[in-house]
Amino acid sequence: MVSMVFLSKVILLALAISALCFSPSLSFSRRALKEHQNVKTTGFRVSLKHVDSGKNLTMFQRIKRGMKRGQYRLQRLSGMALAASDSQIEAPIHAGNGEFLMELSIGTPPQSYHAILDTGSDLIWTQCKPCTECYDQPTPIFDPKKSSSFAKISCSDSLCEALPQSTCNDGCEYLYTYGDYSSTQGIMGAETFTFGKVSVPKIGFGCGEDNEGSGFSQGAGLVGLGRGPLSLVSQLKEAKFSYCLISIDDQKTSTLLMGSLASVNTTSNTIKTTPLIKNSLQPAFYYLSLEGISVGGTRLPIKKSTFALQDDGNGGLIIDSGTTITYLEESAFDLVKKAFISKTKLSVDNSGSTGLDLCFTLPSDSTNVEVPTLVFHFEGADLDLPSENYMVGDSSTGLVCLAMGSSSGMSIFGNVQQQNILVLHDLQKETLSFLPTQCDQL
View 1: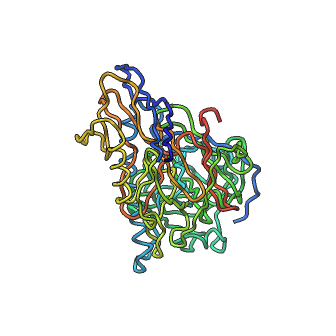
View 2: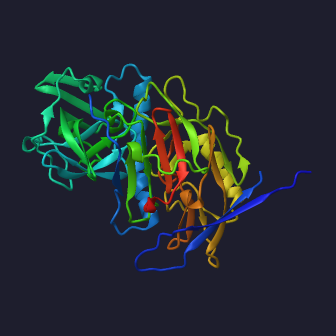
View 3: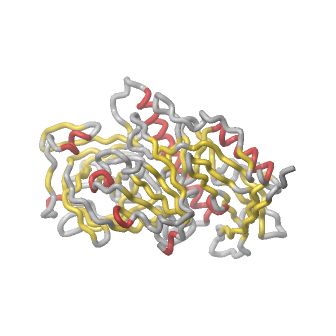
C-alpha cells in the first residue's frame, strides 16, 4: 500500500486593515492532500504603478475596484470573441484598458506621461492637441507642434497598412475600437519615446484627437504590448520582455523589463516554461495551454477540452496583466469552488458582500488558517501558487475569499495570480516562463 505524503507550507498573507483599525496578521498554512523600422534597443526597465496606488484602500476594496474594471474588460473580450466569429461585423474590436500605468516620455523636449499598460492590444496612443473629444487626464495633453521630433506617418508605411481601420487624407488617419465601443481616432505619427534613460526614435503611435468611452482616464493613453505589429514589443523588435507585479496591497512599484534586461536569473531551477499558443482570429493575445488544475493535491476531473482554443477563435486561456482576478470557464470554476469548500475547514459565507464567488468566515480565535494548495497545470509547467496569490483575507469583515471567478468561453489568468512572479515572454522561442521573484527587490 502506497503511503500518503502530506506537505505543508506556512505563508503569511497580508490582510486589508483600515487605517483606524489594527488587528493581528492572519497567516495561512497550505496543505497538499497527496493526491516600421526602429533601431533595436539593448534593453530598459520601466516602473509600473497600479491604477489604485496611493489611495487609502483596503485589499478587499482594491480587489473589488479591480473586479469592477475587470467586468468591463470581460465585456470587451466577449465583444472581441463575437466579432471574431461573426463575418458580418466589420469593425475590429480590441481589449483595451488595464490595471497598471507605465512611466514614459514623448517628444523633444520629452513630456512625461503615465500610460495604461495593456498586454491585450497592440496600438500605442495618447491624446493629442487639437482635441475634438478628449477626456480629462492627469497630465497635459501632448501637443505635436511643440515637439521637434514629431512626424506624420505616410499612408504607405507598414504601420499604417497594419491598422485594422485607416483612411488616407492628411497622412494616415486611424480608428481603433475597443470591445465596449470605446474608441480612439486621430492621425498616426512617429515620435521619440523615452523609457527611463533610454530614448527610442520613430516609434509609431496614434495621436488621438477624438477619444471616447470609459476606463481610459487613469492615464494619458495606452501602450499595447500584444503580439500584433503595432505594439511596442513588435516595433522595438525585441524578442523578450517580462514584468514583475508586486502584491495588490503594496504601495511600491512593479517593473517592466524589455530586451536584454528581461531575462533576470532565468537559469534558476525554479523557472517553469510553457509554450505560447497563437490564435489567428485574436492575434494580439498571449494564449497558454492549461491542461488541468489541482486543489489540495487532487487533480480535478476537468475535461481536456475545457480550456482548448476552438476553431472559431473562442475558448482558450490567455494570460493578462490587465485583469485583476482569474476567470475560469464556468464548469471548471464550479469544480474548483467545490474542491475548496470540501478541503477548507471553514464555514462558507453566503452573504455575497464581497462580490467574490466563494468566501469563508474566519475563526475568531485564530490568526492561522489552513487552506488547500492550488496548482495550475500548464503544458510543461506546473505552477504551484503561494496562498496569497489566490486567497485574500479581511479582518474588518472577518472573511477570507478565493480570488477567482467564472466566465463563459474564454478563460483569463489574472494579475493577482501573477503577484511576485517574473513573467517572461520569449517571442522568438514562443514560450512564456514563470519565475518566483520578490518583485519589490528586483
